[in-house]
Image 1 (cartoon, rainbow, N blue to C red):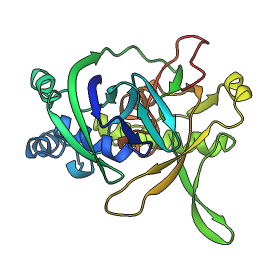
Image 2: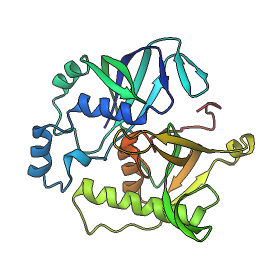
Image 3: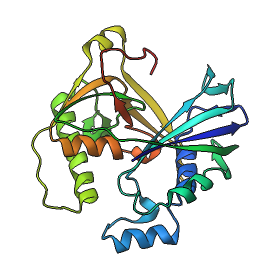
Length: 270
């Protein structure tokens, strides 16, 4: 299920490294660390630690903004948090949630207090899924592995040219999520492939993006993701899982969120 939370943000400037702070606000909106949520997971046989719950993704969209180096200047305080999650509808009281999002929260973004005031909640209906779907990523897809670089084993973030490895890792990532969501640990799925939009790639020198993810308890982490329209082919259950729970890693930090792309037209500034 997907929801859109209309919010007001103050002050009117925030760091581009807002992922951790907005993730914190979402956890507060949805009360994902409450005893009631822990009871829901336990009673429904989800073997997940509620404090480490990561089966959701989000994207923050601003009504009107401009960039000033690493700072987002909000011309308007209005913004929208798009949130997608697979297993919460049975847990959430939607009338209560609609009231909850009107609360005021303060979160830390790179040490600065940022006020987030919810204004309105909208539910976004889900469409059908097939074995070939076109998507546009609202936030970068991140997948990583280990490689020996300069004689040391290091984390390596996959690029579009790492096609076979990327396809395999994305399939495995979505399969594990689907097993949790469906509570079917024996589910098997065939191959999954991602085809990046060649027209878009021809217009852009680079379709990868580096993001610095803040962590108040540790050093910030740089991740590299892919941001491009694409076609994904494979098991419809896995494709739907990516749509509702996020494609790839660190989705709970606002990465790997995609939307349907119904035709060849798309914004050149995603």
